[in-house]
Image (cartoon, rainbow, N blue to C red; front, top):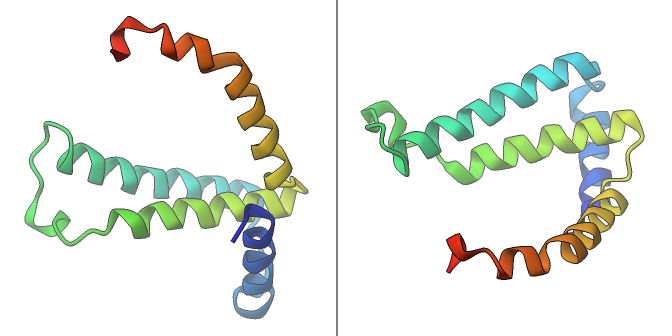
Length: 108
């Protein structure tokens, strides 16, 4: 599924199951909360913090999917074509960063 289709799937889900989109500020708060949950898993599982027993069953993929869902909601409700924006950003990063990363001694 490409991003355009994902936006359409989320929009259909919202209309069929979610009644309506939360407003943009509520969704921004939701996004912050979901990113925090991802950060907690990463910090404890891959970072130096110890993982609590209650964190061991947390699914990183599920939390990343929550982040993606809210991002798609925000794109839909603000009229952003995320596929177009992502493609444009990837082109920019490709032209801007190719040599920069290949020449970065820290990455060798």
